[in-house]
Image (cartoon, rainbow, N blue to C red; front, side):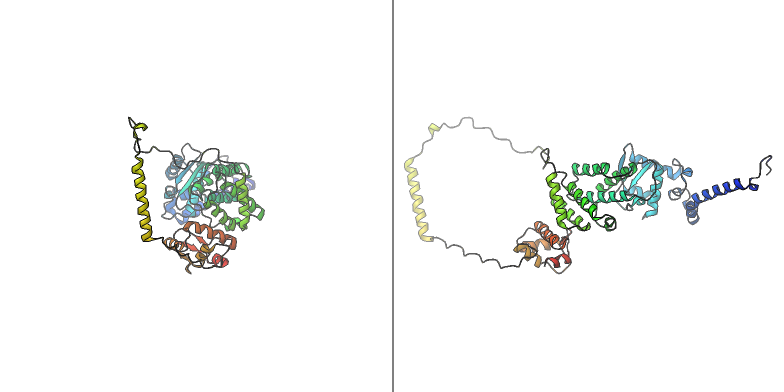
Length: 424
């Protein structure tokens, strides 16, 4: 090819260096895409490969990428935040068991379409395997590592959601306290607050577990842990009442935070005293019309009192006959001897400050690591204690003796041998 009056830039050093720099920059931007297509050519045009392209080369309105973004926008609709079944999102990965890379690819494409996702593995969230995910509007998503303030906020929300969900119901006051603390007390960017609101929605819509938090808790010093205990106690008391299940969860969290049980108890007492009283009657059961029987009308003409007469002689005769019959029966049967006194219960050495019945129950626990719910109820009945009340009482004593519960789970009940040995 011949170009008239066009200089040959390859003879000039400065333009050549600029072209080389531009070529290197483009090659670096395309390196991840190039490696992926080199390994799996069939992925060209798929979501996995589109996620590796620079923003300038991704068409959000065409092909599989366009279909995916259109679906995501329809699920979000006109709302700022929306809950979506995780299975519907993971179906776009095309794998039977989508992994972390596949979910991150979907999150990248959603971010380019102005949609955020929680949980997001890029920000410390788990890979969704079931339940729900949350979509929300974002502007300019960054893939930078989350800040320490953001990681601390996710830990606070995780523990706060666990306390709120302990009694099976999230009160409006509890949710408002969590959101208010998120908005005012935490020093976060606007994008971080928006993502944390979605993270809280996801936590409240899923089953929150208190496992796998040790590494995140290690980043929090003791003073912050005590402040965290105060805040979680305030969440439990926000609705004006503290459920026993919430107390149990708070004591488990105190163990995770490596705080003495009395620290959490003091925080709970202070929060309960500071909690405002209920401003309206508590609804125990919604009112419903009951189908029954109508009240019969009164008698049309009651009998006048002047027409009622007692025969005094007949009444005296009946009283005399009753006295004679009573005397006759007394002479035949006599008075029955009183029941012998019951033998005093055997003396039992108390276990961890428990009464005799609960102490006997602790000593009667089997050697196995667990027992069924039916076996537990039979054991409690044999020692004349209520099954559910006995679990709470024994766990309270175990927390005082060992800092952890004695019995966990529903069916079967798991026996904490370390706590049992400490109590004994």
